[in-house]
Length: 116
Ligand SMILES: [Cu+2]
Image (cartoon, protein in one colour):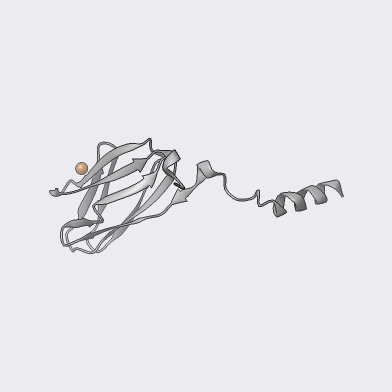
């Protein structure tokens, strides 16, 4: 009986929601006409990012980042999911290793920038 009351109280308080530290964002990054769109992505610090990279061009691309230690081929007219973060505040460059003129960056803002 007590357990049931406690469960009801927990549910009512909304405590089943994921803790803030486990928050996840799932932005879309498009490759189109040999450009990353957008070429700058901004996130708060401490958030897991499930980045969907969709290639609208017929040429394959390779999403590569030394700063984020990622190297993933994106087939022509294909898409991949790349998990990054949680990241510390700062700027993280990425580029297409098959076409170095295609570049972009992930900008991570300090946690206290949220909600201001
Ligand atoms: Cu590479």
